[in-house]
Length: 204
Image (cartoon, rainbow, N blue to C red; front, side, top):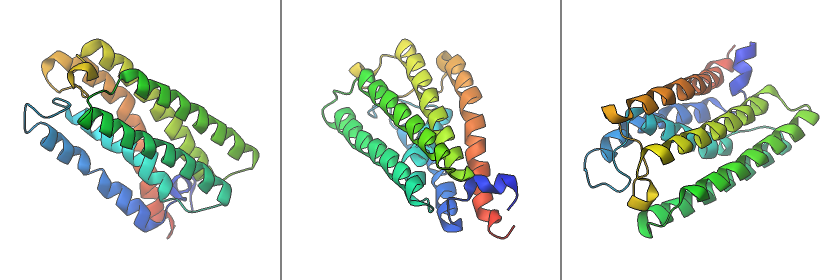
């Protein structure tokens, strides 16, 4: 394998293909969420829809599909389990009780970041392979980005108190969506490169 192929070495070709195909849910969710003006959560921009699918894939599905040493799997499962539990609770509070608060998400984001960095530090001392270090660095980076996005969301929308969970794509939010692209697209590109490495690296 060449160096960049190592970024996706923790996934099988089948796992990488699944992660790639899941990215198609971004446009699908954007279309579905914007079909009805009364949809819970409000309208969403195409960028925000793709970001949501990307981070759900990265934070939950990608860690569950990795193969490798026991220590790396332990960290992956711990982080994925934490996000999966948060997702279940958040969906219930958003869709059923309508009692989700931004502060809940920020508190968990902070916890997730600490866990990710602790796991990263531990695996570095163990001489862990490149792919798991890359995955954890990208995870930490996206969690920080999500915290930034939430701060923008709080100042620009009515927020969860009025069942608004997304930033729409209209001209009023053009600046936020543009800044979103600056932070989101480089990280998304790195993820796609890693998946491509997993797909072609086995023959390289």
